Amino acid sequence: MAAIKIVMERGADYLVHDALAELTLSILQKDRQKDPSLGYARDIELLANTCYPAAIMQGMKIVTDAGGLNPYSAAQKVVAGLTKNGVKACKIAVVTGDDLMDKIPVMLESGEILANLDSQIPYSDQNHQLANANVYIGAKSVVEALKAGAQIVITGRVADPCLFLAVMVYEFGWKLDEDLYQSDLDLLASGIAVGHVLECSGQASGGNSYSEWPMDYPLSTLGYPIAEVFEDGTALFSKLESQGGKVSRNTIREQLVYEIHDPSNYITPDVTVDLTHINLMEDKPGFVRLTGVKGKPRPEKLKLSIGQEEGFMSDQFFFFSWPFAYEKAQKFIKAAEEIWSTLPIKIERKEFQLVGINGIHGSAAPLPPKEILDNLNEIGIRVVVKHADTRTGKMAFQSIICLGLNGPPGVVGIPGWGKQDRQLLSLWPTLIDRKWVEEKWEIIE
Image (cartoon, rainbow, N blue to C red):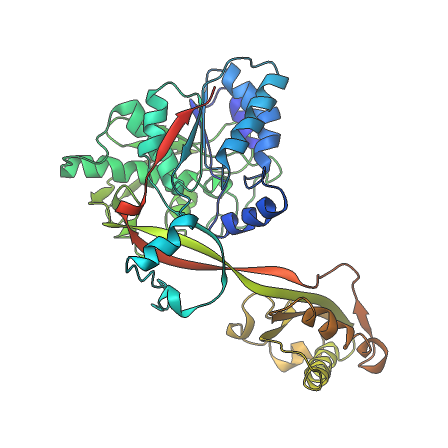
């Protein structure tokens, strides 16, 4: 709805739709395994029938990575939606080259280690089945597609902020990857900073905000942030006055540090960004100006995100009522572990997450004082097990159902809350040489 409002009020020249998180492509692979025509972010179908037609009719352009693992199929859905809604002529470009799944064996044979960025373990030391392998590419092909007249650009795994950077490089004619001076790097870094603010939509306009707590503004009509960008890299952030939320120095700086490991070296395919010199100034309420972003040369290697099928996960919820809710939960956990120890099954990992106490942070969350634990009105347990085969999860939970009558009093099992034998996907991040990447783009309409 927030994007549609921007379209209807002609609040921007471009809509950029970022649809991919770290594990999204592995999830999309599950879709494609069931149906080869899938593998894209499914919400693009809804947008193709609502937001996109109105945007094209308004003269706006669209850039999105919602193509996922199957950008050509996504493009076909967009064409169908546009046609159905009266848009007969629209130049749509598809960007590919990020999918390196077929190249993994060749890379390994050539001596690539593909070491895990977190553990430094070589890829050859694990034996999980490959689900997908997508490299984070930059703005280059999107820029070329826009230069060719594309009104909609649909990509695979282009790095989130590079989708936005591509628009600025195209509009302003910034240099991207050749003979770059410091001033050029600063411009690219500014474009990335703008993209980073915008990529999570409502987080920059008052959603998910601690700094603006208690968030005394409407959330049901939260407007998305809009950036007016100038040729010198300066950006002015705002939102539609008709929409809820809030754009402030707080909300913008909160988003700037979101998912940033090193503010002085935010690494993207096109440039390394230094955010430590930025200046954020509120020109007036609701309008925040960003300047002072510095750039460094792009990294020599690119990040490859490998998705793996790592067995299965099964879970179920149980709740215990007052009195002694916490003690009841502990007795239930002890009984479940004892039952599982007698079964001919292999549980690779198990967790008992106490909802409302440490269901999110696990053991890192300190327990409340005893007087609070002793007087909880109720407590929930999410029981989770990881296992290698489809038999274990069902047997594990069937074996503890008896605790409904044989265990502590006041237990409630929630039908449908949980699922057995859910395919478990994991992420293997690594770095590769740029030589393995062959980007392509094509106008299909």
